[in-house]
Image 1 (spheres, rainbow, N blue to C red):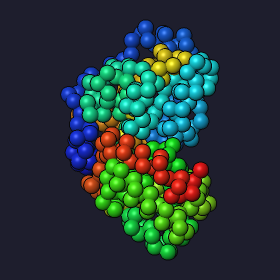
Image 2 (image 1 turned 45 degrees about the vertical axis):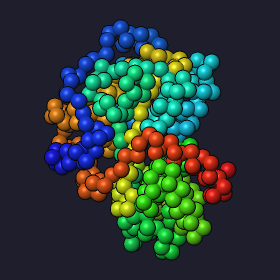
Image 3 (image 1 turned 90 degrees about the vertical axis):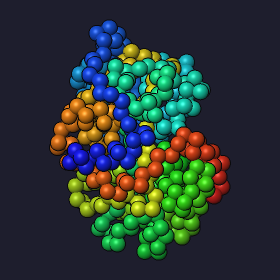
Image 4 (image 1 turned 180 degrees about the vertical axis):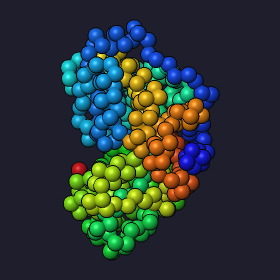
Length: 364
């Protein structure tokens, strides 16, 4: 199984080629003491079933005895950025210390002076292509866009975007949310455009046109895809990152039976990044949180939640990944054509969606 997982990583070496393995380092006693003195960490947009964050948060609390104040678990990347902007002068409980956002949001937040630099002890094992050289943001994990299908309702499981135009999928297809504010939704639109042969701005145009046609045909449901809506049959076909859909499958435990499909015609991978707010009320707790996330323990916590941690290659090289975790990961087949859009392509796509989505989709 280890070789099986390595096959996936070979396919994405441009993004995740790990540097030489480094010995895991513990945060300094001074940082731990300063963080404990602050006593609290404020997070935002971390649902407990996303990347295994529930266990990760509990692990951090148990290890350091720091209270975690969790804001708006279901917020999108854009909401996280707005929360920093709205709380620049606020040191109260509504000001986030840390953010976990889509890749394109990292450089933009740096440019706008919203985040501060910090290099964790395991910095050298984070691929250079997935981090800001000055330490303002750094990749944490990545996934591939997938479809979750309620097999009680959908008997003929679609294999890709092209299949979804069929009338038999009426009132069935759902997106994670609004692509103007959520990265997973933005990349759903991008993947639909990728299936049409587009990239960058063209992918956004093609993807928006696809979703508009799906809406006009009655196949696209005007409800966000979720485990509850999947179970109730409101959104029997939904898009999200593979780790979210796989966690949803586990949560539903066969009620209803659910199949997870990587679209054959639009395989897109997405990287998320961590950063510390430039206005963090608890800067030391924020730094300690980063140390925990990028430690072996934190990285394996994400892996338990089906996310591919950014230090995966480093951990694998040191034989630190338990076989039972590897056995639960989805097979490498289906990931072979995964496309990692560049920051430039993502920025071009986001600009198109920001400008045209409301008009094309009739969305406010």
